[in-house]
Length: 168
View 1 (cartoon, rainbow, N blue to C red):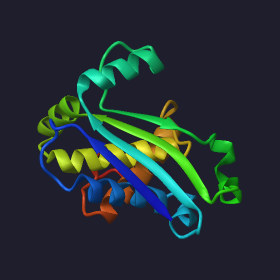
View 2 (cartoon, rainbow, N blue to C red):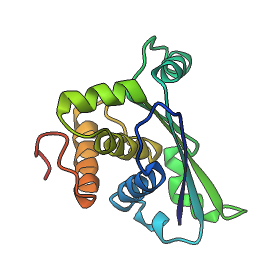
View 3 (cartoon, helix red, strand yellow):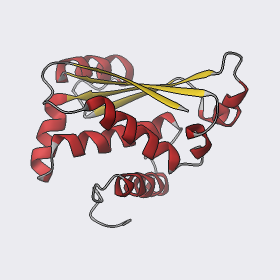
View 4 (cartoon, rainbow, N blue to C red):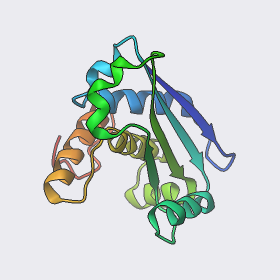
């Protein structure tokens, strides 16, 4: 079972962010090799924080040594090589990690793409969830695999392929 906690600053537009984040995380997980997380008795927890560019800038500088805001940051709490053994938890709960989105960057990117902030934030939450599941995009093959899974997840939510219909 999957539980998503959402914290958001007032700068974000009105939307049902709790439902949006829950749907995005569940879609990503069910389109991954860890689809069983959605139905297991173990509780898999993800926190999503919708915050300011300034806070994301600070986090990006502290944890990635990049002195600028970025659209999304992910902080996995489970090593990717241990994800398959998480159902063996002592207390029945697994914190997969945190996903943090920057409002200004997200809004600017959405405007540039001509899509709603909600749809772009959904994509970024899906993207962040795949990072929590051990996916990366440093190498071309990794990026293509991750993008294909993101696209499948988004299509299941009625959101078009953010990569230009390469995977739809």
